Length: 76
Image (cartoon, rainbow, N blue to C red; front, side):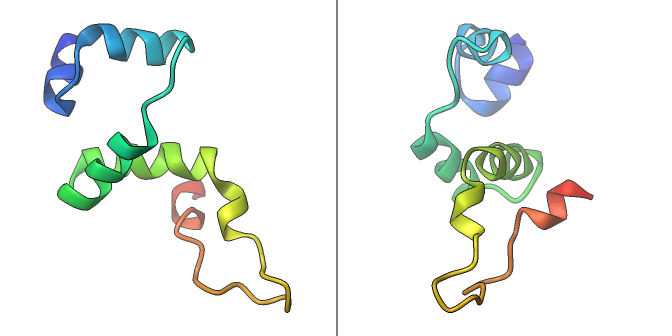
């Protein structure tokens, strides 16, 4: 957990809390990872946000999805 935390830029205690379910990564932190990285950190943030925010990708009022659902890729 120390290496994983160091690679993410957080303490190993934060990672331990995430793993134990006592806390979740902050949304602003996850967005930072999405915006600043195009490697496993981006994928890590994307997978958590897709679990946390699936309602973001529901059809709008006229029955159409405004954008493709980026979470569909992570389900496969």
